[in-house]
Each structure stands twice: as structure tokens, then as C-alpha cells.
Amino acid sequence: MIDYGQFCTVARGAEVLGELWTPLVVRELLCGSHRFNDIHRGVPRMSASLLAQRLRRLDEIGVVKRVAGAAGGPAEYHLTGAGEELRPIVM
Image 1: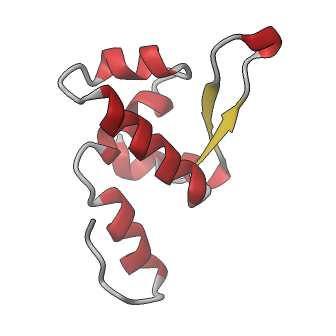
Image 2 (image 1 turned 90 degrees about the vertical axis):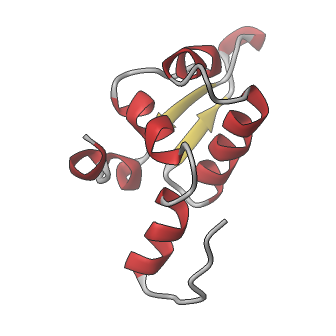
């Protein structure tokens, strides 16, 4: 992970979006994928464990919200307002 060691929002954003595969994961969410397997189909060369790691990190920083599946179904990932603000950058 890149660490600029700054509190500037631009530097902090670059730390996250600069990670390998992260912009593509955000792109898949922006394009309507919400379940893990759907997101993974959009980035097939990315390992499943790395995708899980990136989704957890995006959830931790408030870009993505993980929503438990209904009746034990698969979880879904949805962009938060902060995640949606990345649309012009990623698209």
C-alpha cells in the first residue's frame, strides 16, 4: 500500500485509489455489479482473496457499504455517497 503519511484528502484518496486493482473494483460497482461474484467477473484476472481484501478496505474507509444478504443470501456491496463521488474520476 502506498503511504504518503499525510492527512490531506487528496493524498489519502491517492493512497486508496493508487492500490492495484482498486479503480477497476470501483468501476465495476459504478457499472452496477453488487455481488462478489459479479464484481469478480468484471475483473477476472484479479484473485478472489485480493478482491475480498480491496472490498474490505473500501468498506473501512467509507467508499463501499457491505450489506448482508437477505435470508442468508450473498452479501452485496454498494457505493456510499463518497464512492459515487469517484464516478467522474473512474469513468
